[in-house]
Length: 495
Length: 95
Image (cartoon, rainbow over all chains, first blue to last red; front, side, top):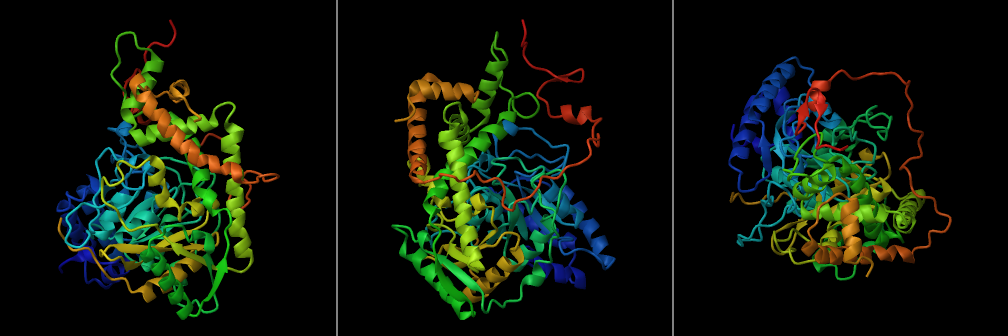
């Protein structure tokens, strides 16, 4: 059967169970697609032998008639996840040569269910970036182009390799992680679905840490149904992550009833930014109309502290990063700088970190160091954490008023060209996350759904934000939006 | 202007990242752009607001103080740039 790599998880699952296809064939189709995709630079460590062995095992399990949903499904894994025996570098030169002796809980959950790993996916260094231009492996290229223009576009970031790989049908789905928008922004830029679950749903154990109070893993898939299936497998309570929550993981796919009649959808006025492109405005209005037509009640709401989310994020995330990344010292793993005669341990630290960290990571580590330093801790860090509490309270208030989900644009623009932001100051790049970062600060679940194309033929996404722990209900809202938007476009294959 | 060249040098030192002298002015400038952006937080009234600690108030789990893992020296040293005789090796620290 041709083009097995273009299947969704749900279709592949059904065909595998019906005996119409095998995981080995499905996996080989993906491996072939991966092999022909070097110009996208999405896959950076390929594991074809592991994949074929896992696929063969999955086929055996499926024959027994009691295989889980993800059994035999070929996936790409973001480089941020530690995978036993397979290079895991977080897109950084400082982890050159690092091969974990352990498996992250999320990937272990996937493998326990029989999922197949095709390889590791490119990303911004330590997940710090919105364009996948900070990776030690080089830029990832978006499979989408502006019409006939051959200029390379960004797939977004930091989960840019995951987004590019799923959009280009190199794998059926991929894992991503989201600290300020790193699943939802690249999903929007590439016309796929991306979910950031409630903070605590997915274990962070074995996921290279960026900002521990914000980081969450989630699925990046071709459809909302696929996200529901994959998310359920990724979630679990994990005693190795003290912030992982001990509540049951529901059957998210069963929540996709397609019925949102009587639900209350909030439209936050603060997300109508000055200078927002008309196309984004229009997309949002269209999405609102779709939810209304599906029988939901549309309610204007206010989230008054929205404008302070990005500044608060750029205190809290660098502060946590500066602490988390202190472990890269050239002693226990990864890169160690060559030392000159007479260099002591301090020179070893300083040279190793200067060589191993790229400019954006260095900048954030130093900003974090500054805001945590004596005399500034209260003025910056504690103030930002208080503002964070107010941002969360804004959401608590609207949910207390009975709002079921909040609809916003996912990004302020469509994908931009690689290199186009090179001369912009760092803050300009940070603005990419203006609609997504509030969700991380409040710990809420959010999903990006492809909802239309711009005038240049590039995908645009809408974001839905849900109540904490109610991913099932959120996915159902997203499912309705997906059905109504009817987004079926795919990038033309040029790579 | 929050960060001058001397402050940038001190921050780099605290972060244990070697920054050459000629790179400090650009770095200080970038810090100031970012801190200028962060400065907006001063507009917010945070009087009486406790810093946020968790999404859903929950007690951190406790467990018995028992050893459940260990005896894996080889694994722990496997990725070290320099490991000798069962130890991580570093440049001489004490004269």
